[in-house]
Image (cartoon, rainbow, N blue to C red):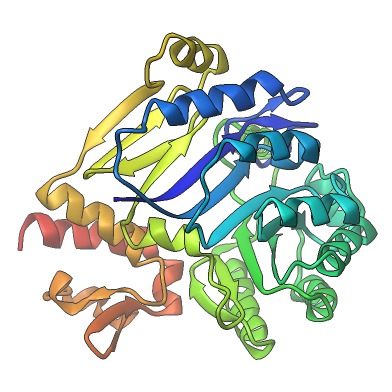
Length: 360
């Protein structure tokens, strides 16, 4: 049963040097919204019990709200509990937020990334710290209760004092959720190329651990639950859509490069916009790659997503944790999960678990 719908909007005003998502520096295309509706129609045979919708990107907030009004007229969102839109702080004003809320978009995720000017300039963001604060306050005054922000840490030369300055601002903002992402020099990004050439010096593993634990402790003291490696929420405000991913529930992805997980299969759409467009216009599902998951591979996939969360997995899923990595696990009732130190080493721990799964 498909419970989540992810919609990828690939258009951006500029390409951030750290971003490895499929995106294009271009004006948002009205035709693209029509393609999304056509693609959804191609999957009408699937069993839907839609609970969440997530508009991600790219930059969904590049579209004027009047186009989102047209788009949502044709989207059946009855029974949907959470509809999230990713927004750049500079995109919308209070009146726009009021319109989005009327459409049923009841959760906003702002790509703030930092409240320090030097960090925003380094990250290639166009907004100022004041614009980030303004957007959040205007969304709140428009009636939003469910507001999230993204924060990037692990920047060159960043200190704990820098993070304290960020948290001073965050403490006074009416947000209910925060995603804190470690700056990663992905291969096909500007930062990735600079890092490979030795021209981007990132913090050491020890410094990253210190920052990670500092953020976890400080945000917890501010009333945020650290419920997934990179995510923190006030009580009752976990991201319902992302929880579908981490609990192995079925979801459909629409748009260029979007991924889906349905009937024990992961499949991804074309990353090339023209190939995606051509397939949809020809009435074909724009799938570029597909992977069926059974047995051992399905279990590995489940562990990969579920161990990212504070809830972990049922004990029967991991009855025999190897002794040399047991120190990184915690037992809580009938479930087992990674400790915070375990989260820091999750990739290495998963490799050890793969051996256990393959050779029980």
